[in-house]
Image (cartoon, rainbow, N blue to C red; front, side, top):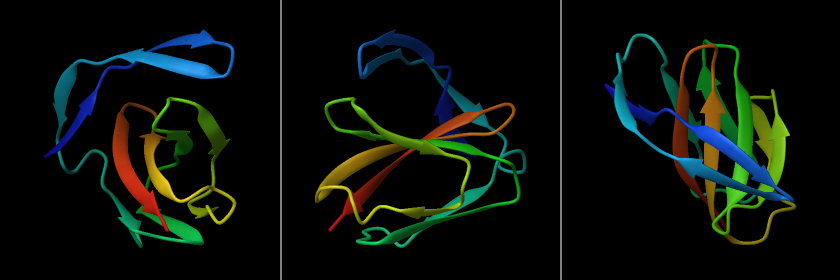
Amino acid sequence: MLKTGNWRNIFKEDYYWYTFQTSTIPSNEFELFLAPNPTSDILNIQTSDRIFVQIFNTAGVLQFSTNETNIDVSTLEKGMYLVLIKNKKYTITKKIIVE
């Protein structure tokens, strides 16, 4: 089972604030794998679902959005980032480290 939340997006300038409520996703409804983590160049997201990806820094600033599953993170500064991965029904948040 994967943990996720119901996100409510409140937009203000380039910052995103979220309210979060936890819920559980049945493991057969949204399976994914991120590798390598930590990474310095390409982040690969393996999933059978069509996805939309947003990467935020720890200050909550959106770094970029994409529909791709191979994401070039080489332009990001070293540090921790939050990756929001959305399919048609769920949103999952993962932490990654860029070295």
